[in-house]
Image (tube, rainbow, N blue to C red):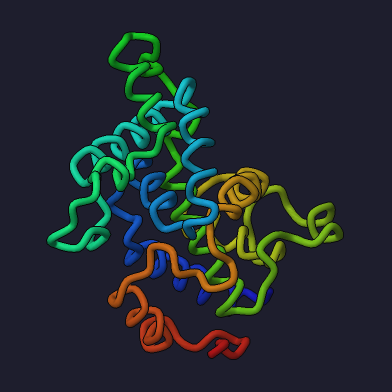
Length: 224
């Protein structure tokens, strides 16, 4: 990638991260948002996975705790029962059994909050992953370097590397291309790469739609 386009892409990435709804979230809040925004058919599996990780990871523990609190405060599906229904309401209680078991274990002292966890930077990593995905779409570049460039380019993020990971690495001031690629590999599965509806809001969409006025039009035409 030429230097001019690379600088525009770096500025674009900074805009993406500055306006993202993820910017002010903690890592547990981001994990909760990921689970809640998943399609219903895979949401349950994601919750079970999160519960399993909560034994060893602080962010996951705090996320499960937040989900348990939300479920306790809002246990019934809105509009499930008619106003004059004589049916047993307990049949419609939507507190997941796995979450109930987790909470029971906590109250009985069989589960305790871990002292440390490797996902304390999950929010930062998702913020970077979201920016990488936007760069792929807006600039038509690869998320990671090709094998040829990976072996020939410098170890630090740069225009010569030419990937979205290179761009975000510079924009976020994360040293080492390999570190950024590892972040992308970790979080890309949690981003909807088809519709990218997770975390988007009206302000986010508006600013990205008008980003050309802020940073100049990318060399590659933006996709509609």
